[in-house]
Image: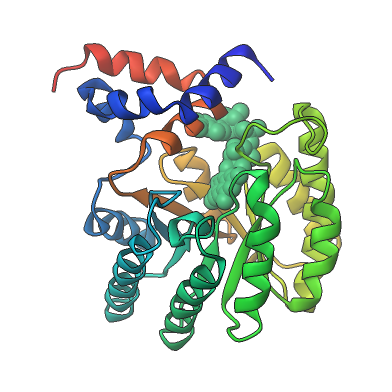
Length: 309
Ligand SMILES: Cc1cc2nc3c(=O)[nH]c(=O)nc-3n(C[C@H](O)[C@H](O)[C@H](O)COP(=O)(O)OP(=O)(O)OC[C@H]3O[C@@H](n4cnc5c(N)ncnc54)[C@H](O)[C@@H]3O)c2cc1C
């Protein structure tokens, strides 16, 4: 892992920086590249614009690690209103949540009940609920949470991280449930004992798992290949073509503001393209993880230091 990436991942977890950096105007301006605004209405406006260009979306309100289980009720109320608002329109946009935003690390049973409420709403509104995957300590509880909710509600997906040594066995265990699986490389700082740290090895792990999951689409898995690594996505496209998996049998998923030209191109070429749009006030750790993925983006932040407001 490069020094810059390691330092940024450290900064994403630092409490002092978390308190001060979000107040800096130049950081707020740079943030706009990745986030259309802090409100649900900002995210839905961006979703409607993408929809017009053939790109579907998922929206997620930033925030993780509640300090009080009662805060989860507010999160459920927020997403309930979001499902209702999406159902009232015609834009293809789904919802993705972080399990710790629903109190996973405070009260497991309460988190199950919160996720069940949202999954029930997703099902009744013809929508989906996606569970993000957080740092490695949360993988077991997140998978257990997913299994519990998936037993009662169909339109639920989970994110799996290719960099973890355990992921091939998680894939094998989950595929029979006919889940939604969003495959990512993995965004957190993890030790070598549990995760690959070499980028080439991570890419190959993503490729192997992606190829396996493409075959599993025929068995009812809803697959999202979530990566901006177009070379890797295209390699998997070749695998899919050779295996007779149609372009519309799986999704390519990317983040709002990253590689938008490629996102529109994939949509034009007949792939199912879905963009994850984040919004909300708790953007600091998320934004710094995005910078860590591509430290060159720091240049963008610095340019905004000198930009006019
Ligand atoms: C839809 C979606 C959902 C995700 N959900 C999760 C999750 O729940 N849990 C989790 O751990 N991780 C999640 N991630 C993040 C993921 O794990 C990676 O950290 C992230 O996608 C970067 O890896 P990459 O596959 O894009 O490839 P990389 O090898 O990092 O990047 C490939 C190329 O894409 C471009 N690129 C990548 N990132 C950026 C950036 N920030 N800014 C500008 N260009 C960039 C660069 O040109 C780079 O060379 C998600 C990613 C996506 C797209």
